[in-house]
Image 1 (cartoon, chains in turn green, purple):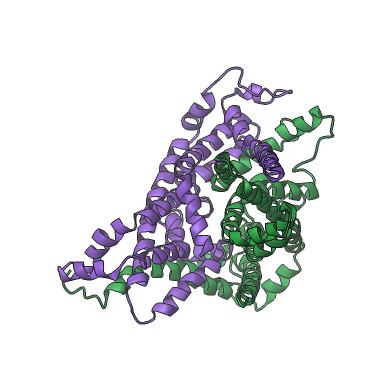
Image 2 (cartoon, chains in turn orange, blue; image 1 turned 90 degrees about the horizontal axis):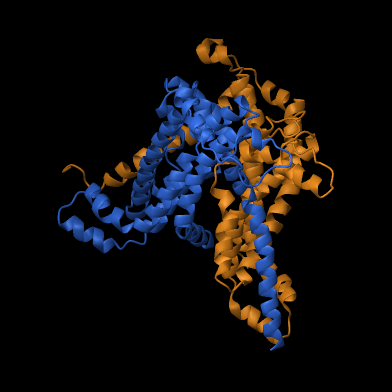
Length: 295
Length: 275
């Protein structure tokens, strides 16, 4: 180990991780860009001489593919319904837990966080059973309360809402923790001043807490939005994107075209459109974050 | 005095609301566990039973005797071991960025952070093609390589290791220790808190790995528990008790580990998100 001077040492330490990140994170971006302009399929994979450049044809085709458009519509549906639900629920739980003084409230942190750490495949299997129209627990509970059964996963629109409900259940934990951390960062003196002025709890929450949490709310909405853009396992396991592509997500569309139909070039074009969407959302986040820190 | 009463009332209301919500939150888990001990004929009874009438372990033995869950479990454990190794590589990189000055440090670190923005759905097609070119499809190496290291882990290690005082490193260096020995004997022991959290997350990540085994493995020989469970669901769609046993087998170890270490995990997020 003698020739191992401290000049070379840092490169030795970072090399393995950097090489892996280069090969499996950065290089793929360029490969994806390249093959999105080719007709790469199984024949092209076997022999690169079968490969030919087709310009923007994949992009034009994918943007006029009714299934892809459906996937984008579904993603917008997930974002518009799902993001506010996640924020309101996690913030509500965080506020209640944070205002609680008894030790029992620490237990609630664990209970609500639990779904976040569990395996998404297992959870999807369990929820498919709960949603089962004949033997599922949910429809049984509805019927025993004399309410009509809900076609949880068999109607295109209801199926989207059912997936949102399950994703909400999984998302509350982590976002609640983010909100609790932000809540604890608000100086106590603000509340004391408000109490001296005679403000009640509701006024304190709406006039101090919510404005002070602006950034946390924004952060949660961006990460939740990116999560929906990448929504994959739940529709893959529970509905295979059905019924009638009603739960098809952009990520599932890419997987199906790439690995089930072997249209790698076509799927890569779809994935690049997804990538641009993720970058756009992230850039908006940075712009607003920069603005926020001006205060 | 009126304020104190009001506050007490609020505490009770908050407690009751959270309790009802909490019951709803754990209900899917309770239903999963109870159903996994029922006979297949009991699971499809209307009205459903809450507590199993004939408590049975058949579903669990079925998983291992008639299905390949033993193979899936072995593969999953191999992936968990690899993710510990990946965590070690993350720690090394974090140390390199935290304690050395070298050419291109800032730009390299920026590149590491930039990879956090790349969604796996964008890289899955090209990574498959790259691994195919390296003849690594349908191998364990092909399954673990794409997600072995991660920018977030490197970032957290770097954050933690910058707080270790330089003087300790200098003193060991004067004693003639090599840089790698400094890392192994000084840095690693000093980093126990962050290592503990990262090890738990590495275990959970490896245990839950789904996407790469799904893409890379061509047959059951290399399936993980997640992939095996999704196969079980599509092959035995009507056997709910069997499916619940598979799901319970996957979920319970993580729930137990999480409950034991919940303080470390939750505080890790609380501190890293408030920074």
